[in-house]
Length: 286
Image 1: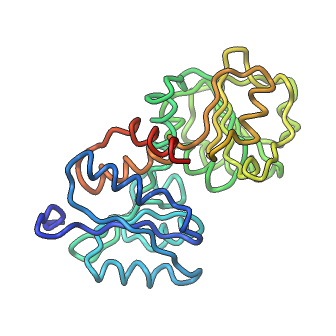
Image 2 (image 1 turned 120 degrees about the horizontal axis):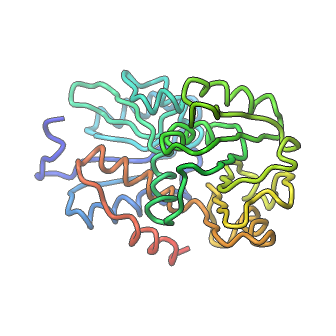
C-alpha cells in the first residue's frame, strides 16, 4: 500500500450497506481524520442487494483504499476477501476491507474489538472472570464471541429464542474455552431460569422494536452490567428493562460503533484515534 499516505490527494474510504442513509460512519471517520491530521475522504455508498462485489470493484478501481461494511453485506465481504484475519475467520463475517495496491482484498472484523474496548476502556467494566451472557445467536453475536473469550470470562452463555441456534453457535467455539472447565454453552431463554450473570449483552435487534426477550427477573447479579449492542437517541427497551430490574451499570452500543470504527481507522492509517470525544459528540447530536 505504497501510496496510502500520498498527501497530494486524499485517500478514499467509504462504508457500504443497504440502507445506508442512517450511517454515522462518515461523521466518525471525518472526526478521526481531523483529530489525527490524516488527509482522507470518507463517504457512504448505498449498494443494491446482489451488487456488492461490483460496487467494491468499482470503488477499488477508482483508487479506494478501504471499506467498512454493514448490513446486509458482511457475509458477502467475507466471501469476497482474498485473505482473512484470524478474527474475521472466527467471526464468519467481515466489516472492514483493506484494498491493496496489488488489487487484493484483505478482510477483517473489528466489531468484537470495538465492543470489548468500549466495555473495558470506556465504561470501566470487567469481563475477566465474569459470568457473561449473550442474548441472540445471529451474526452480531458470532462477531463478538472471539474477542470476549480472549478476555477470559469465567463462563460464556448464549441464549436464543430458538435454542438449537444457540447450541450450534456455541459449538463453533468448543475449541476456544474461556477456562479449562467452562466451555461456551447455549440454550433457549427458558434455560436461564435460576441463573445469574455478571454481564448481559443484548445482541438482538428486538430492542429497537421496543421488545425484550423473555428474561427472568433475577437474571443480573447485584453488581452486574447490561450492554445493548443497539443504540438510539433514547434508552432502548433492553436498557429500560435493566433499569427496572435494579441494574445500575447500563450502556447502549454507541461506544461499540465508534470503537470498531477506530480499529478500522487504525488498520488503514496506522494511527489509533481517541474515541471518547467522538462518542460524546455523536451522543450530543442524536
